[in-house]
Length: 341
Image (cartoon, rainbow, N blue to C red; front, side):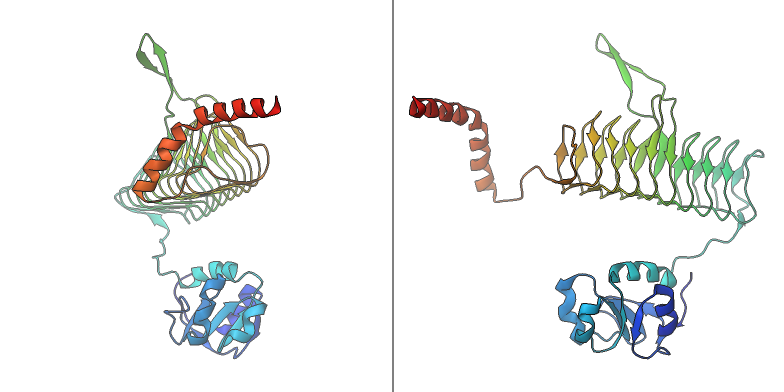
């Protein structure tokens, strides 16, 4: 949807929220509690921002029922205010809406299938056998390799690259600089010399997948690299060949997943976390930021590794002690034996 003026009653009906206030109040935008002005709607999702409720100038606030009495203006009551904000944000998104059609400067192979409802931007390239679904948007300068399939309603921002035979599901969102289907890092070594292995698998994305800017997903060496439905990948993520990611898993920026690892559903990986290759990660695993996984994780839960920042002086002391742990453990065992004896 484009920027517009709507009434609070219309918003309440759209969100399925209980309205306490004037249904005819006009809303022209959305903002934070601190920055909102009359005519804008805000929300309270994090309790730490509750202190701004009493001073907000927003014409309405989306809140949980427990916070309704703290809000001095119109309120929309939802059990999950953040989800309400997420849904409503699209009503006021100022991003230009792509017009259907193929730009004159685009290069589209005669065998490509491009519905009338699709949009192909300037200097985009669609190679032989490409099939676009209804209402697909291919941004300027994007390259869609041979025989790729892109599902209905998917959006590729400018400069997205799909190598050959990539499959993208419906309603996916690929941000600028994303590269899907690049060759996996596969080489055979003979006497110190590396020999390249052809990567003959594909990349297959499910529906409603988001791939962040400059994120790369390598094609499979033999089997496909598979990204499940609803997976959300932030910017600057590396997914290696033959990885499988389960439905509705989310990964923050700079995560790295090594080859042939299988990740379960509904996992959350914090920024800069990494997973070694050929591992199995269970459903509902949460890695905190910068966690390094070197073995299978067979149980759901929160996992962490690494240490938090501290002064350099303290870190150097701790680093020395860390190198002494093995010797300390041996001495402790010897002492235990003497005590038991």
